[in-house]
Image (spheres, rainbow, N blue to C red):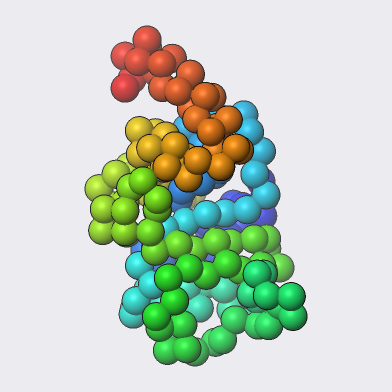
Length: 163
């Protein structure tokens, strides 16, 4: 979890506009599942691309989906037009998506998020309802298994009057 916290802190410090999605969002909602990567939804346009590049500077960011693992360009202009950035850094794995299946592009994800405080950070996190929709829509085995747990969490929150 330290690597996850380190990545999120770095993005926060550089004022990257993003919403936490995926496994980390599930954990922040109370899931007991483990995750080894950070998934975020972010607008992949200027000036956010410059902030992303600045946040990752010094962490040896490289493309994790290519066998030769080339370094991420330090020039935000070279990233224009990308819809997703699948990266490996010295801090850990970071996947940056401009759209969440079942929710939409960043401008639809943002209103389906809530701000939470974790330690010294304020983060925007996909709401539990939107996360369940996204996991259903992704329909991968691991996502459908996660939905079961997230629905139990949702039910317990409703019983406590929190949702």
